[in-house]
Length: 156
Ligand code: SME
Image 1 (cartoon, rainbow, N blue to C red):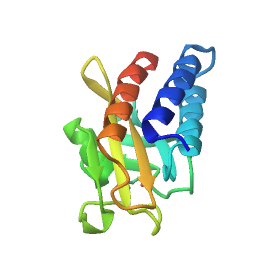
Image 2: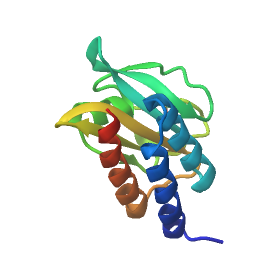
Image 3: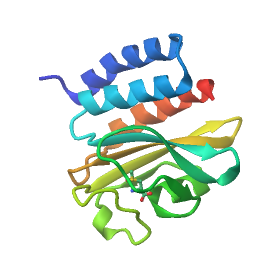
């Protein structure tokens, strides 16, 4: 069985290829969701929220893999996603049941990581990952996903 770091090394190459391929931005984002969901343990819901061009303080649900969510539009400041967007900072929650400003997408979710995607210092979207395991996201996840979101800036 591969360690998480080995998985990161191998999917980094796949994602780099995907990003350099032809294809729309949504196709690339959907491909990344699929790779992360399939290859990383307990990445149970993986999706992107994109800043609404018509309402720059609102997030719109983009490509995702996992259970459907009712949270299609999220105002900045609301929930984990909205707070990460407002602060332009990574937000890791080890136990979502302890958060008061939290939007539940499924009762099975226990931990979550949200990473902003910045372009020229402005937030353009976010990567949001939910896990059914508490404390699923450690420093290795954070470092790998931060680097990924930095590279994603290029397709915005
Ligand atoms: N949990 C998020 C909402 C998005 S769903 O999990 C897909 C939040 O609190 O912002």
